[in-house]
Length: 281
Ligand SMILES: *Cc1c(COP(=O)(O)O)cnc(C)c1O
Image 1 (spheres, rainbow, N blue to C red):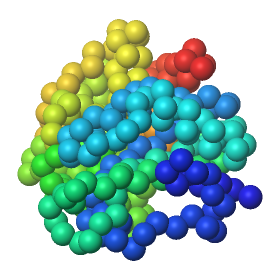
Image 2: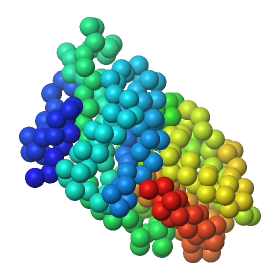
Image 3: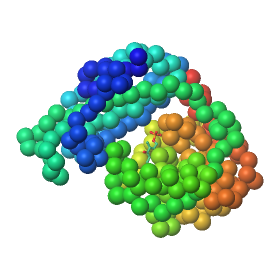
Image 4: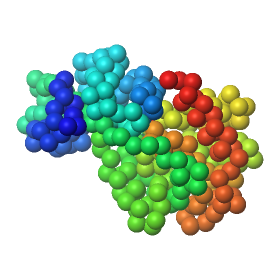
């Protein structure tokens, strides 16, 4: 029987319930992480848990666990569910309390929940690339927090799905920010361009890995804003996240990106990413 982590207990999936007045449910008042497991290894676990603690701090949520304690809780869940290749979703909410926008006083205990999923890497898509569509970024101005409030992201992804694309690339006016659940890179004349880390994007762990791979390979990694027009004229486009890794975009708004094939810089970054997985486990 598959288990779900609810606070410190591993409970059977069908018994895994949370209170009706949990603030995550009522307000989206909470934060989350998604971590990949490769060959029994929880990939970049420390970076993810550190980001979870940062998100918690940014919304004034007190979490009683440190990185080591979180690692242990999640590791136990993964072992119990026998996850060899897959992922683990973790969310923390401000807890259950009578509905009132302001934080509960006295404060209540945060609720932590985690579940696992077993699956392989997206080999076929990584080789062939995906379609993306562009859409206005309508999200709030603290996109650096991995918040449960995902309505803007949900509507963007639904728009992509409706038009046969696998990801929506968002822009605020002229400036490209990021995907609905991924970071975005335009490659032009052998150089990578991606939005700088600030409140307009989520600072992806995969982005950090790509940056390190690019630096190792001597590929210029420019953390600069760029326009929608620049993106449309890019030689190659990549979107990245924990689940889609270094994903080539071969069609944007129905038009070929470059020659419509997965480009050489993309392939080189994918190769470096694979090596990074092998050397960090
Ligand atoms: C999680 C997420 C990403 C990717 O972050 P990773 O740490 O690489 O998984 C990018 N953008 C948004 C909006 C996200 O929620």
